[in-house]
Image (cartoon, rainbow over all chains, first blue to last red; front, side):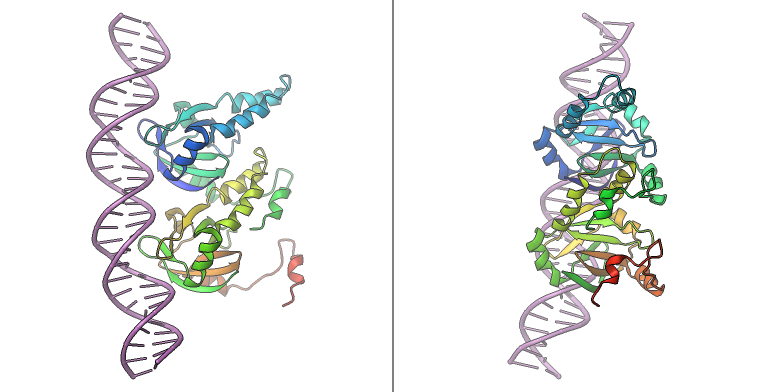
Length: 153
Length: 153
DNA sequence: CTCATTGGTGGGTAATTGTGGGTAATTGTG
DNA sequence: CACAATTACCCACAATTACCCACCAATGAG
Protein backbone atom coordinates (compact mmCIF):
# COMPACT_ATOMS: atom_id res chain seq x y z
CA UNK A 1 0.00 0.00 0.00
CA UNK A 2 0.97 3.64 -0.13
CA UNK A 3 3.50 5.30 2.09
CA UNK A 4 6.21 7.92 2.04
CA UNK A 5 6.76 11.51 1.18
CA UNK A 6 7.39 12.75 -2.37
CA UNK A 7 8.37 16.24 -3.43
CA UNK A 8 6.77 17.05 -6.77
CA UNK A 9 5.72 20.00 -8.79
CA UNK A 10 2.46 21.26 -10.16
CA UNK A 11 2.93 22.45 -13.73
CA UNK A 12 1.34 25.48 -15.35
CA UNK A 13 -1.62 23.38 -16.49
CA UNK A 14 -2.37 22.07 -13.04
CA UNK A 15 -0.95 18.60 -13.53
CA UNK A 16 0.96 16.50 -11.00
CA UNK A 17 3.16 13.50 -11.79
CA UNK A 18 2.33 10.40 -9.75
CA UNK A 19 5.57 8.72 -8.59
CA UNK A 20 6.56 6.04 -11.07
CA UNK A 21 6.59 3.34 -8.44
CA UNK A 22 2.83 3.66 -7.95
CA UNK A 23 1.76 3.97 -11.56
CA UNK A 24 1.81 0.27 -12.28
CA UNK A 25 -0.14 -0.59 -9.15
CA UNK A 26 -2.75 2.03 -9.88
CA UNK A 27 -3.14 0.83 -13.44
CA UNK A 28 -3.73 -2.70 -12.30
CA UNK A 29 -5.89 -1.94 -9.31
CA UNK A 30 -8.25 0.50 -10.98
CA UNK A 31 -7.17 1.20 -14.55
CA UNK A 32 -5.53 4.44 -13.46
CA UNK A 33 -8.88 5.81 -12.27
CA UNK A 34 -8.61 7.99 -9.18
CA UNK A 35 -10.81 10.26 -7.12
CA UNK A 36 -9.67 13.56 -5.51
CA UNK A 37 -11.61 15.24 -2.81
CA UNK A 38 -11.01 17.90 -0.17
CA UNK A 39 -10.02 17.07 3.37
CA UNK A 40 -12.73 17.96 5.88
CA UNK A 41 -10.29 18.66 8.74
CA UNK A 42 -9.83 22.44 8.73
CA UNK A 43 -6.47 21.99 10.43
CA UNK A 44 -5.17 20.00 7.50
CA UNK A 45 -5.97 21.78 4.27
CA UNK A 46 -4.93 19.17 1.82
CA UNK A 47 -6.47 17.06 -0.90
CA UNK A 48 -7.20 13.37 -0.58
CA UNK A 49 -6.50 11.09 -3.51
CA UNK A 50 -8.11 7.65 -3.62
CA UNK A 51 -7.81 4.80 -6.09
CA UNK A 52 -11.31 4.38 -7.51
CA UNK A 53 -11.71 0.93 -5.97
CA UNK A 54 -11.02 2.24 -2.49
CA UNK A 55 -13.27 5.22 -3.00
CA UNK A 56 -16.16 3.01 -4.02
CA UNK A 57 -16.02 1.13 -0.75
CA UNK A 58 -16.43 4.40 1.10
CA UNK A 59 -19.20 5.45 -1.21
CA UNK A 60 -21.02 2.19 -0.60
CA UNK A 61 -20.92 2.75 3.12
CA UNK A 62 -22.35 6.20 2.54
CA UNK A 63 -25.46 4.89 0.84
CA UNK A 64 -26.52 3.71 4.28
CA UNK A 65 -26.39 7.22 5.72
CA UNK A 66 -29.87 8.30 6.80
CA UNK A 67 -31.20 11.13 4.65
CA UNK A 68 -32.64 13.00 7.58
CA UNK A 69 -29.52 13.11 9.67
CA UNK A 70 -28.31 16.63 9.08
CA UNK A 71 -24.75 16.11 10.25
CA UNK A 72 -24.38 13.08 8.04
CA UNK A 73 -25.77 14.96 5.07
CA UNK A 74 -23.44 17.83 5.72
CA UNK A 75 -20.50 15.46 5.71
CA UNK A 76 -21.65 13.73 2.57
CA UNK A 77 -22.19 17.04 0.83
CA UNK A 78 -18.62 18.03 1.55
CA UNK A 79 -16.86 14.75 1.08
CA UNK A 80 -18.69 13.29 -1.90
CA UNK A 81 -19.80 16.60 -3.34
CA UNK A 82 -16.18 17.61 -3.72
CA UNK A 83 -14.97 14.31 -5.08
CA UNK A 84 -13.87 14.58 -8.70
CA UNK A 85 -12.71 11.76 -10.95
CA UNK A 86 -9.21 11.99 -12.34
CA UNK A 87 -7.34 9.64 -14.56
CA UNK A 88 -3.66 8.99 -15.00
CA UNK A 89 -2.68 10.29 -18.43
CA UNK A 90 -0.26 8.49 -20.74
CA UNK A 91 2.72 10.03 -18.98
CA UNK A 92 1.52 9.15 -15.49
CA UNK A 93 0.16 12.54 -14.46
CA UNK A 94 -3.19 13.64 -13.13
CA UNK A 95 -4.96 16.94 -13.65
CA UNK A 96 -6.14 18.50 -10.41
CA UNK A 97 -9.33 20.59 -10.72
CA UNK A 98 -8.84 24.35 -10.29
CA UNK A 99 -11.27 24.54 -7.37
CA UNK A 100 -9.34 21.91 -5.50
CA UNK A 101 -5.99 23.52 -6.15
CA UNK A 102 -7.35 26.74 -4.78
CA UNK A 103 -8.92 25.10 -1.74
CA UNK A 104 -5.62 23.63 -0.63
CA UNK A 105 -3.50 26.64 -1.69
CA UNK A 106 -1.41 24.53 -4.01
CA UNK A 107 1.55 26.44 -5.39
CA UNK A 108 4.22 25.16 -7.70
CA UNK A 109 5.84 22.83 -5.21
CA UNK A 110 3.84 19.99 -3.64
CA UNK A 111 4.25 17.18 -1.19
CA UNK A 112 2.50 13.90 -1.82
CA UNK A 113 2.07 11.64 1.19
CA UNK A 114 1.26 7.95 1.07
CA UNK A 115 -1.39 7.24 3.70
CA UNK A 116 -1.85 3.48 3.38
CA UNK A 117 -5.11 3.42 1.41
CA UNK A 118 -4.99 6.94 -0.01
CA UNK A 119 -2.64 9.84 -0.72
CA UNK A 120 -2.66 13.35 0.66
CA UNK A 121 -1.58 16.26 -1.53
CA UNK A 122 -0.19 19.31 0.26
CA UNK A 123 1.28 22.59 -0.77
CA UNK A 124 4.93 22.35 0.22
CA UNK A 125 4.97 25.46 2.39
CA UNK A 126 1.77 24.48 4.17
CA UNK A 127 3.12 21.01 4.84
CA UNK A 128 6.37 22.32 6.27
CA UNK A 129 4.50 24.76 8.50
CA UNK A 130 2.26 21.93 9.64
CA UNK A 131 5.29 19.79 10.48
CA UNK A 132 6.89 22.55 12.51
CA UNK A 133 4.18 22.63 15.13
CA UNK A 134 4.48 20.14 17.93
CA UNK A 135 2.56 16.94 17.66
CA UNK A 136 -0.29 16.33 19.93
CA UNK A 137 -1.31 12.73 19.80
CA UNK A 138 -4.15 13.02 22.18
CA UNK A 139 -7.75 13.20 21.10
CA UNK A 140 -10.22 15.98 21.72
CA UNK A 141 -10.86 14.25 25.04
CA UNK A 142 -7.17 14.27 25.99
CA UNK A 143 -6.81 10.51 25.56
CA UNK A 144 -4.39 8.67 23.32
CA UNK A 145 -6.44 6.78 20.72
CA UNK A 146 -6.35 3.18 21.88
CA UNK A 147 -4.90 1.81 18.73
CA UNK A 148 -1.83 4.00 18.98
CA UNK A 149 -0.80 2.83 22.39
CA UNK A 150 -0.36 -0.71 21.12
CA UNK A 151 1.86 -0.17 18.12
CA UNK A 152 4.94 -2.41 17.98
CA UNK A 153 7.10 0.42 16.67
CA UNK B 1 18.14 -9.06 15.88
CA UNK B 2 19.88 -5.72 15.54
CA UNK B 3 22.18 -4.19 18.08
CA UNK B 4 25.28 -2.07 18.33
CA UNK B 5 26.61 1.22 17.15
CA UNK B 6 28.19 1.79 13.74
CA UNK B 7 30.01 4.85 12.48
CA UNK B 8 29.37 5.34 8.78
CA UNK B 9 29.39 8.06 6.22
CA UNK B 10 26.80 9.59 3.97
CA UNK B 11 28.22 10.09 0.49
CA UNK B 12 27.64 13.04 -1.81
CA UNK B 13 24.61 11.32 -3.35
CA UNK B 14 22.92 10.73 -0.01
CA UNK B 15 23.72 7.03 0.25
CA UNK B 16 24.59 5.10 3.39
CA UNK B 17 26.26 1.68 3.49
CA UNK B 18 24.43 -0.86 5.64
CA UNK B 19 26.95 -2.83 7.76
CA UNK B 20 27.89 -6.00 5.92
CA UNK B 21 26.88 -8.24 8.80
CA UNK B 22 23.22 -7.28 8.33
CA UNK B 23 23.03 -7.38 4.57
CA UNK B 24 22.47 -11.10 4.29
CA UNK B 25 19.79 -11.13 6.96
CA UNK B 26 17.99 -8.24 5.35
CA UNK B 27 18.12 -9.90 1.96
CA UNK B 28 16.60 -13.05 3.33
CA UNK B 29 14.06 -11.48 5.62
CA UNK B 30 12.65 -8.97 3.17
CA UNK B 31 14.55 -9.02 -0.11
CA UNK B 32 16.60 -6.01 0.93
CA UNK B 33 13.45 -3.90 1.16
CA UNK B 34 13.53 -1.33 3.95
CA UNK B 35 11.44 1.58 5.13
CA UNK B 36 12.85 4.84 6.60
CA UNK B 37 10.71 7.23 8.50
CA UNK B 38 11.20 10.19 10.81
CA UNK B 39 11.21 9.78 14.55
CA UNK B 40 8.21 11.16 16.29
CA UNK B 41 10.03 12.30 19.43
CA UNK B 42 11.18 15.90 18.98
CA UNK B 43 13.93 15.24 21.54
CA UNK B 44 15.46 12.57 19.34
CA UNK B 45 15.75 13.89 15.81
CA UNK B 46 16.81 10.75 14.07
CA UNK B 47 15.52 8.48 11.35
CA UNK B 48 14.05 5.05 11.95
CA UNK B 49 14.92 2.24 9.58
CA UNK B 50 12.72 -0.87 9.50
CA UNK B 51 12.96 -4.07 7.52
CA UNK B 52 9.86 -4.11 5.33
CA UNK B 53 8.40 -7.14 7.09
CA UNK B 54 8.54 -5.43 10.47
CA UNK B 55 7.14 -2.24 9.06
CA UNK B 56 4.17 -4.01 7.55
CA UNK B 57 3.05 -5.26 10.91
CA UNK B 58 2.81 -1.70 12.10
CA UNK B 59 1.10 -0.58 8.94
CA UNK B 60 -1.45 -3.35 9.20
CA UNK B 61 -2.40 -2.16 12.61
CA UNK B 62 -2.86 1.30 11.19
CA UNK B 63 -5.40 0.25 8.60
CA UNK B 64 -7.84 -0.01 11.46
CA UNK B 65 -7.44 3.67 12.28
CA UNK B 66 -10.74 5.51 11.82
CA UNK B 67 -10.57 8.17 9.11
CA UNK B 68 -12.42 10.75 11.17
CA UNK B 69 -10.24 10.52 14.28
CA UNK B 70 -8.11 13.61 13.96
CA UNK B 71 -5.41 12.60 16.42
CA UNK B 72 -4.97 9.25 14.75
CA UNK B 73 -4.83 10.83 11.31
CA UNK B 74 -2.21 13.27 12.55
CA UNK B 75 -0.10 10.41 13.73
CA UNK B 76 -0.55 8.45 10.55
CA UNK B 77 0.31 11.50 8.49
CA UNK B 78 3.59 11.83 10.30
CA UNK B 79 4.55 8.26 10.73
CA UNK B 80 3.37 6.65 7.49
CA UNK B 81 3.34 9.84 5.45
CA UNK B 82 7.05 10.12 6.07
CA UNK B 83 7.85 6.46 5.58
CA UNK B 84 9.70 6.02 2.32
CA UNK B 85 10.69 2.71 0.81
CA UNK B 86 14.37 2.13 0.26
CA UNK B 87 16.09 -0.83 -1.20
CA UNK B 88 19.58 -2.12 -0.67
CA UNK B 89 21.44 -1.52 -3.92
CA UNK B 90 23.89 -4.02 -5.40
CA UNK B 91 26.66 -2.72 -3.18
CA UNK B 92 24.63 -2.85 0.03
CA UNK B 93 23.79 0.83 0.30
CA UNK B 94 20.51 2.66 0.69
CA UNK B 95 19.59 6.07 -0.62
CA UNK B 96 18.11 8.31 2.05
CA UNK B 97 15.55 10.83 0.74
CA UNK B 98 16.65 14.48 0.80
CA UNK B 99 13.73 15.51 3.02
CA UNK B 100 14.73 12.94 5.60
CA UNK B 101 18.37 13.89 5.58
CA UNK B 102 17.37 17.45 6.19
CA UNK B 103 14.90 16.58 8.94
CA UNK B 104 17.54 14.81 10.97
CA UNK B 105 20.37 17.22 10.08
CA UNK B 106 22.46 14.43 8.61
CA UNK B 107 25.95 15.57 7.75
CA UNK B 108 28.74 13.48 6.31
CA UNK B 109 29.31 11.36 9.39
CA UNK B 110 26.51 9.18 10.79
CA UNK B 111 25.83 6.77 13.61
CA UNK B 112 23.67 3.77 13.00
CA UNK B 113 22.19 2.14 16.09
CA UNK B 114 20.77 -1.35 16.22
CA UNK B 115 17.48 -1.21 18.11
CA UNK B 116 16.37 -4.83 18.16
CA UNK B 117 13.66 -4.68 15.49
CA UNK B 118 14.79 -1.49 13.77
CA UNK B 119 17.76 0.84 13.34
CA UNK B 120 18.13 4.47 14.23
CA UNK B 121 20.18 6.79 12.03
CA UNK B 122 21.71 9.83 13.69
CA UNK B 123 23.96 12.62 12.63
CA UNK B 124 27.21 11.96 14.48
CA UNK B 125 27.36 15.35 16.20
CA UNK B 126 23.72 15.21 17.25
CA UNK B 127 24.21 11.75 18.64
CA UNK B 128 27.21 12.76 20.68
CA UNK B 129 25.40 15.80 22.06
CA UNK B 130 22.43 13.61 22.94
CA UNK B 131 24.67 11.21 24.82
CA UNK B 132 26.04 14.05 26.91
CA UNK B 133 22.75 14.85 28.59
CA UNK B 134 21.74 12.82 31.62
CA UNK B 135 19.18 10.07 31.31
CA UNK B 136 15.81 10.31 32.85
CA UNK B 137 14.06 6.98 32.84
CA UNK B 138 10.79 8.20 34.21
CA UNK B 139 7.73 8.93 32.08
CA UNK B 140 5.86 12.20 31.72
CA UNK B 141 3.95 11.17 34.80
CA UNK B 142 7.16 10.59 36.76
CA UNK B 143 6.74 6.82 36.77
CA UNK B 144 9.14 4.19 35.52
CA UNK B 145 7.46 2.38 32.60
CA UNK B 146 6.32 -0.97 34.00
CA UNK B 147 8.18 -3.09 31.53
CA UNK B 148 11.49 -1.52 32.49
CA UNK B 149 11.14 -2.32 36.14
CA UNK B 150 11.06 -6.04 35.33
CA UNK B 151 14.15 -6.38 33.19
CA UNK B 152 16.51 -9.15 34.32
CA UNK B 153 19.53 -6.99 33.75
C1' DC C 1 55.75 -9.29 8.15
C1' DT C 2 53.50 -9.84 3.80
C1' DC C 3 49.79 -10.86 1.09
C1' DA C 4 44.99 -11.74 0.05
C1' DT C 5 40.34 -10.80 1.22
C1' DT C 6 36.62 -8.11 2.73
C1' DG C 7 34.06 -3.97 3.72
C1' DG C 8 33.38 0.90 3.19
C1' DT C 9 33.80 5.00 0.08
C1' DG C 10 33.90 7.86 -4.07
C1' DG C 11 32.65 8.82 -8.52
C1' DG C 12 31.70 7.90 -13.82
C1' DT C 13 27.93 6.47 -16.77
C1' DA C 14 23.63 4.77 -18.41
C1' DA C 15 18.82 4.30 -17.56
C1' DT C 16 14.80 6.00 -15.57
C1' DT C 17 11.81 9.51 -13.91
C1' DG C 18 9.96 14.17 -13.57
C1' DT C 19 9.06 18.68 -15.96
C1' DG C 20 7.87 22.03 -19.45
C1' DG C 21 5.60 23.23 -23.36
C1' DG C 22 3.80 22.77 -28.46
C1' DT C 23 -0.15 20.96 -30.80
C1' DA C 24 -4.23 18.39 -31.70
C1' DA C 25 -8.60 16.80 -29.91
C1' DT C 26 -12.50 17.58 -27.09
C1' DT C 27 -15.76 20.07 -24.51
C1' DG C 28 -18.83 23.65 -23.34
C1' DT C 29 -20.96 28.12 -24.66
C1' DG C 30 -23.27 31.58 -27.18
C1' DC D 1 -22.58 25.98 -36.07
C1' DA D 2 -18.47 28.65 -34.77
C1' DC D 3 -15.70 29.99 -31.22
C1' DA D 4 -13.08 29.91 -26.93
C1' DA D 5 -11.50 27.25 -23.26
C1' DT D 6 -9.97 23.19 -21.60
C1' DT D 7 -7.88 18.81 -21.80
C1' DA D 8 -5.01 14.92 -23.65
C1' DC D 9 -1.16 13.51 -26.26
C1' DC D 10 3.41 13.89 -27.66
C1' DC D 11 8.17 15.06 -27.62
C1' DA D 12 12.42 17.15 -25.70
C1' DC D 13 15.12 18.31 -21.88
C1' DA D 14 16.74 18.10 -17.04
C1' DA D 15 17.28 15.86 -12.81
C1' DT D 16 17.66 11.91 -10.28
C1' DT D 17 18.70 7.25 -9.45
C1' DA D 18 20.86 2.63 -10.03
C1' DC D 19 24.66 0.17 -11.61
C1' DC D 20 29.36 -0.50 -12.13
C1' DC D 21 34.17 -0.31 -11.16
C1' DA D 22 38.25 1.44 -8.83
C1' DC D 23 40.47 2.63 -4.63
C1' DC D 24 41.84 2.39 0.24
C1' DA D 25 41.89 0.78 4.94
C1' DA D 26 41.30 -2.84 8.12
C1' DT D 27 41.56 -7.67 9.05
C1' DG D 28 43.16 -12.25 9.24
C1' DA D 29 45.96 -16.16 7.47
C1' DG D 30 50.22 -18.12 6.22
